Length: 127
Image (spheres, rainbow, N blue to C red):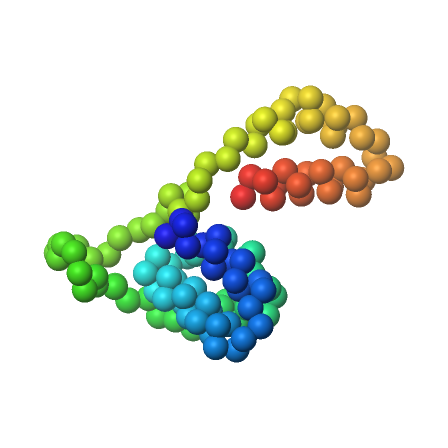
């Protein structure tokens, strides 16, 4: 699934044709049926309109066990997918090292917005 998400995200952000938009949304819906909540971090990168539509679908969908039509037919068809298995690891400690944290700590309280924006930047890189 990893290779598809980056391309699908790019297409979803730039798609102007209604047919293509529907296919992209259907991809996320089908993926949700298979892997469940693990898809949420990938949905959050889409346009707000798509996020709203997909979250409504996710809330209304009743999870059922999906059975593969090809491959091994094992007795246990339910499986869990960890979101971290879907993405490549990123070493954020190169950019956000001890020097970075000391700079953030030294920002005076008067510049609270600057401090919170730096912390949000860290949170975004870590997710």
